[in-house]
Image 1 (cartoon, rainbow, N blue to C red):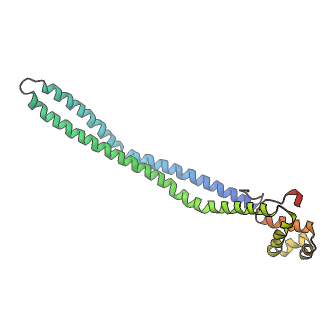
Image 2 (image 1 turned 135 degrees about the vertical axis):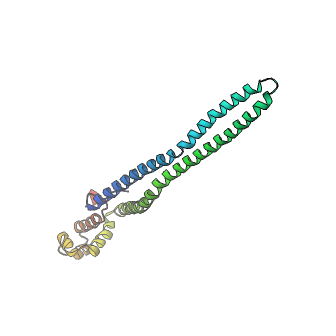
Image 3 (image 1 turned 135 degrees about the horizontal axis):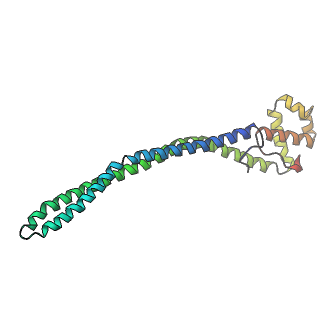
Length: 205
């Protein structure tokens, strides 16, 4: 099985298409990374809020412990400080949750920006490459004996312009009926070449 045509304009088109798909994928991967970073940057304020409130929670906890040690009124002094620390803890958790959601959204946006346009192009490009590979494999199976060349010779006589047939033989139909293996091989090879398929094995030319 061959993935590429023999040297021809068809091979140039195949290589050009492959290069386009590669460049397209790299371009959209870069775009996805850029958008991922841009959206992730929106989580910065939430992360800063989380860090600042976490530091305040620590300060209020320390103050509450110190206030609790005051004889007689320690419990009363500590209660509002503990309550403030609890509210700040909730605020820190909310900020952390918001940052996580933004970062997840950034990951999703980055993946979709890459995946959707690349999938559209690959959905067009890949079936064509697979069809060519399948035709190439089938052609190789069909030319495993001299008798199989008749099929491609008939295809050549049915599809080639008359001037190309004349360059192969003055009367290709008569040569085919007479079993002229040289003309049949030339016709078959021309048909394969026109399809961009691999040439005939040396022993069958």
